[in-house]
Length: 187
Image 1 (cartoon, rainbow, N blue to C red):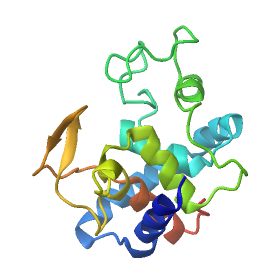
Image 2 (image 1 turned 90 degrees about the horizontal axis):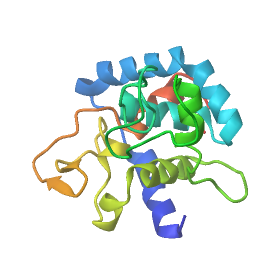
Image 3 (image 1 turned 120 degrees about the vertical axis):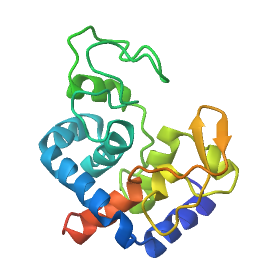
């Protein structure tokens, strides 16, 4: 992660707030994350990332639904059919969240020194989703949806940007803010 990215992510964490109109949605996401915490922790230990990162990614991709692929929310009864297609590659059905997450999240960006910070959580999450927003100098809804930093405009599919679209999901940073408020260490 370069210094420019680190400064941008720090600003997100320092300035983002959850608007009153988003609080119920964010609270529901927090409830799902806490309900699934043990499962996130088991995978996090295997691949060397904080469980809060897995919870946020799974919320974005599958609304925390353990019967859905962690990489894109497709049903776990078959390999993924949406981008990224054909996952998991190294195992055969039946699939579980855990065995898919171990493969589908194996390439998450990690700090070389092994020290996770809030900036590193955001960097890893944004890289997982794609850097299109960063390259366009826009805050990624993947990170800032459901916060005061959210702007209209979203890639509604790979390569298609809709200037007027609002995200509608809980962003990673909103979930991490709610976790911090609940006394959970982030990272």
